[in-house]
Amino acid sequence: MGRKERPPLARLVRTKRLLAELSQEELAARAGVSRSLIAMVEAGIEPSIRSLKKIAGALGISGAELSAVLLAHEKEGGTQ
Image (cartoon, rainbow, N blue to C red; front, side, top):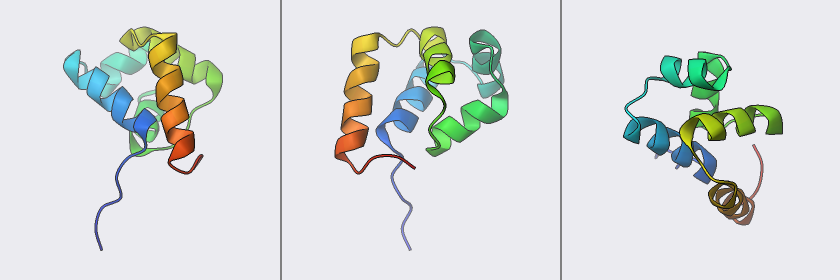
């Protein structure tokens, strides 16, 4: 059985975090959320809008980029 590809939001958060050379703990501290929430988002669990805005802000993800990723997610089959 093959590994399921991560949803677009999970890929975006992980990619941006790694490009910023941040650990999950460091990103969590910058965003004001828990490390476990960062791990869950990167695994494909959708956070609340409030948490998503905090994470996006900490990573410098623009509203336009976030909207495009969320739209792509919907096209791929929606929510978890």
